[in-house]
Image 1: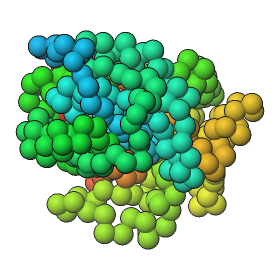
Image 2: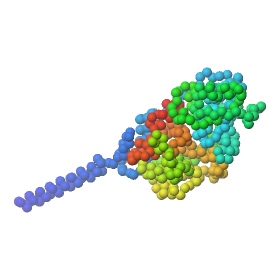
Image 3: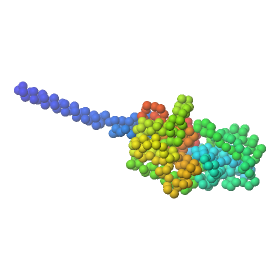
Image 4: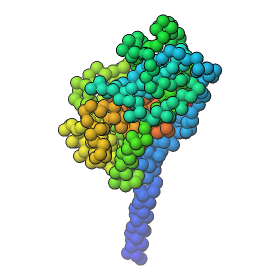
Length: 416
């Protein structure tokens, strides 16, 4: 009997041990599922070291629920439309720099011309490096521009007779120019000269949210509706965006745009780049470390805005093999007009629209390009912008741009 009791006892112990092991297996496979935490939500699933499409959807949902719903234009066409038949003097201006500068230059010119009751002359486009002049219609849709300004500002498509552009008085105005500034600084010169040329310089007023008055509404209309690429150029850039979206290893791969310029290579270009103790410029090495830190998936498609290639990026392609620049995307028949050293305007337009339409946008420098792309992304609903701040956090949501979190960007004066 004693032997039988011992056998029963051992069988019981083994049965209990197997039961405990089974419980541990169930707990491991079900109750202890690894999770990735965000500031606004959690995902439960198979553990992975990468930020993938599922987590991107959570980020988007968190942004829409925690910051705002899908935004719509909230400006109206300016009140008290004037009798444009009485317009006599002319306002001239040129588009310089990249597309991000063109937007603020057009906005300023329209605001000034309307306030003065002047005719706005269709601008030319000046190449940054060569100084050569292009016609407005080579890049932008002339009909769209004129139509969008109907009843607001009279547009002269051709150069007016009897007005010498060489003798025009130049007047500098800040971006986001106010009616008070125009009345005190510009109008006296206009009354004396009859026509003048304005030159826009950047000011902080473009970054912050406006007051919602008629001038703000006019600026919104100018910046978000007046400038449209000509059809052929728009079609080409859209095909490049589609190439990026379809180049991933699967349909759910992320498409990430990183604004990495020549000055971001080495420490020299980013030295002293701090505002109120906040770093505003990151090197190529910083960006690579940031992508690794927030666990961007290896299969992600990454677009870099730099021209050409730098050997220091070879380590990036070892981690993320699907990396593109303009050189890998521009169609063969567009290489000469788009990528030659003299075509700065085309390069900047390509960068602007690719960065504006990506799943995630990561700036390496907090400059005017960054500010304007953020505005475009707010307008189109692509609000995932991650700033590579110095932090130990591995959660992508902890790096969302403050312009979205605080709704402090000027675009929130136009979309609500």
